[in-house]
Length: 371
Image 1: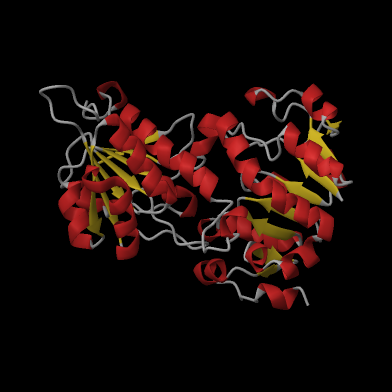
Image 2 (image 1 turned 135 degrees about the horizontal axis):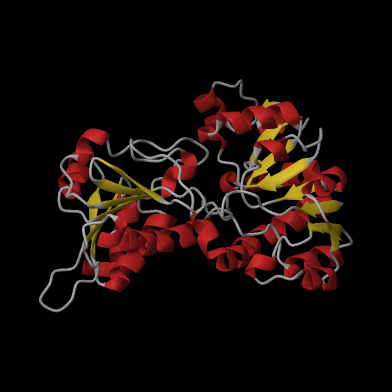
């Protein structure tokens, strides 16, 4: 199989779909890897490293898409990239289609086979290809939120860890999954006063057993969220419904009860955001203010620490890339129900039920479209 790795073109996106080490592994399985020249140079992967690993370098994304049987990326294809997809060509990347009707329309029209990292499941019910970036985004949410709290950035001037004689900042985290736990770890590490809300009592018990009284846990209800918005300096939205649009858990009206200069960090923005006032931003212009509250809603947060993120992501995706290449996408999907769950669009048909439901497409079960 010919596997193509184009350079990412989203605003301030420096990650790349495969490391030189990953290329070497795939080539050893007898496959050809073509990488766009300069695709990894900004994070320390030179073209020479890729060629030494066995990759072939091509100058443009158009050449990559024209020759590859499977495209491996990081972020969702932009409209001009969707136009390059061929019928039957496999696309393996993050998609987040439920909040992106335009991309869904273009992928359906492309007649390509789109497999989304974020809906591939694991044997224990997790999301193994989403988890690495969720870990990064969870940790970054506190780093970004702490910076946004600085007065020069529009925040209320609170230091999350406080100092002797001064109380620490209050951090509220909505969602106790991978993002939420990693955000809590970072916030507690800084010395903040941290409260985490989730709707799973089992998950809250797990977190309590790990972190004890350092982490305050609460069952997530509208009333509990509202009560804790009042004193919060930083609120992290960390809610995920796999494949579906995120629920809106903080309304615009509730911003009025928050402290002026408090910060909202919406890690769910890829799935439409979990705050009513959220809109996607970029690393170039990451924050905006609504009713005195600072919003940080960067849609590719892990791209800010692109080197760490690339290693973390490709550690997880490489076995699946090899499986798809070795077996062909149809056999690989049929033989692995967890990988099959990643199939979102197949030859013009939406095969992810939450996406079909949210965007109004007919749904077909993925096993049925594979024959």
